[in-house]
Amino acid sequence: MTNTVIIVAGGRGRRMGRDIPKQFLILDGIPVIMHTLQRFYQYDNCMKIILVLPANEIFTWKNLCVEHKFTIPHQTVEGGEERFHSVKNALKLTGENEIVAIHDGVRPLVSGKTIARCFEMAEKTGAAVPVVEITESLRYFESPDRSVSVNRKNYMTVQTPQVFKSEILVAAYAQAYSENFTDDASVVEKSGHLITTVEGNRENIKITNPVDMEIAKILIEQRDFL
Amino acid sequence: MTNTVIIVAGGRGRRMGRDIPKQFLILDGIPVIMHTLQRFYQYDNCMKIILVLPANEIFTWKNLCVEHKFTIPHQTVEGGEERFHSVKNALKLTGENEIVAIHDGVRPLVSGKTIARCFEMAEKTGAAVPVVEITESLRYFESPDRSVSVNRKNYMTVQTPQVFKSEILVAAYAQAYSENFTDDASVVEKSGHLITTVEGNRENIKITNPVDMEIAKILIEQRDFL
Image (cartoon, each protein chain N blue to C red):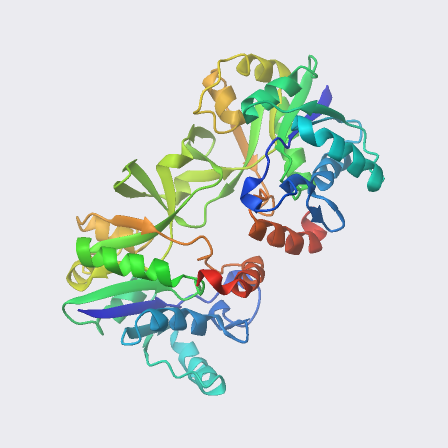
């Protein structure tokens, strides 16, 4: 089977309060997104890598590749309106009998072990996502002013890569878009397929705001987990 | 009404992988726990501050106070078996008609605004806790190998201080201990009282592992939120 990863970097990163999209910010000498591609290339240097970028950032990206002498083979695709549409665009470049991972471009600290666990499980079950424990107490809101304590041990947060057999993923993305699709697992689940979970790695944070970027700098110095 | 805060620092911090308990690690020149006490003292310099420490750390704490010329008035109390028992010990030092906050010793970055919101709301409703949005996708586990996607917008994570009218808190802590008590709100809720929620502050992290300490160092440089 071919391994494929769709790396979604469609967002503008408005929350970072800077002009540079967060996926292009420099982390340890190179743009965040280059780390992300490296992670998957290190896991499988034959992997098909599809990078989804906003149309107006593709030129910048090509220039960054030249500037940083970045040679990992990959294809670029234009993003869509929502993440759902971006993934759907990228799926046109996938074939049959592939194991397809979808990964957030701004999660450069995914470990090789997390990637391996997801791909291995997806090959068995068709759908695997990495999860991590919740360390804080949790409340469920029945309405904005009425909440109850729930046991955090019954919940886990979901990271990426979310990995699926291609036929399952393509069928799921043939559904009409819904605002309730919070991640790829929720799209696949809606189409009737069960999702299996594997252990993620706690360092695999999503760079969403300036503090996350500072945290990523600290984490990448402790490369032993990668 | 008297404002009281019970600062719970009973934990050994085994997860930090160091000999020094995490509440005594140095942050911006002084032990973590001194920052925590300062936050409440800055909100109300007449507040009754009760610090719960493991019995074998009280001497170290007294020495640290001398070393750092720490003069904020407070009482120290020995911790118990579990957090529940530590809080129960401290409650013996509270009186009637008090508004009592319970706060994690290793949350030195609680903002004055968060403290104010909790105390003001608790005075109205009897029970208030600070909450923050969940930024990652969330799954609910029916069993270890069966989970479903849930809408993260219906959930929030709970921080401290968790603030209550003293009579409500004392009545709640008269209950028998249960492993399902994940925080003070869950204890009070079990006794039949509704909990109201207010906005916390995202920087109000719990220092649990070495990376959290690095994050705290970055956050405390940006003091504008405190």
